[in-house]
Image (cartoon, rainbow, N blue to C red):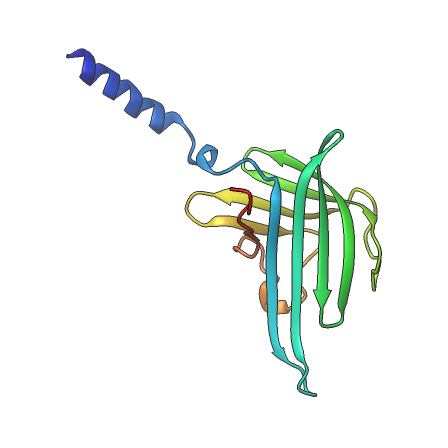
Amino acid sequence: MTRKFTLLLQFAVALLLFPASALAHTDWKGSYTFDEDGGKNAGGSAIFISHELTISDGGEGLVATLESNGYQTSSNLICKAKAEGSKLLIYFQSYGENNMFEPYKEGDLLLTLESTVAKGILTHWGKFTASIPKNQKSGRSYFSKVPDKNL
């Protein structure tokens, strides 16, 4: 075999052994949004809820805020985030200001984001779920990363 062919063969084998999930992004820092449109209620008011998840560096790892606002919704959650392979786990830490309800306890797994090559970012709901029932199925793409304006 020629040297070129041998190198090409080694490269091909390395790609086959390299898991596809490792190709998914693992730099989770940034903002992610998920908007829910539930149509209108019986009185004609729009049922719209906007969720924003912001991930940043903290003193000892990643930290996050999860804000939800809209129709009968107001929450500001302070969270810890933990990257594990192609997944990002979001754990409740404390409440920020302006919460209509406070159902979470410190350490609750709120949700997990999973970066995949084929389907993008998947959401696996934990204690935190979508507000509108049609969006409450886990394993679907709900959150989208907001492009970084500094790039």
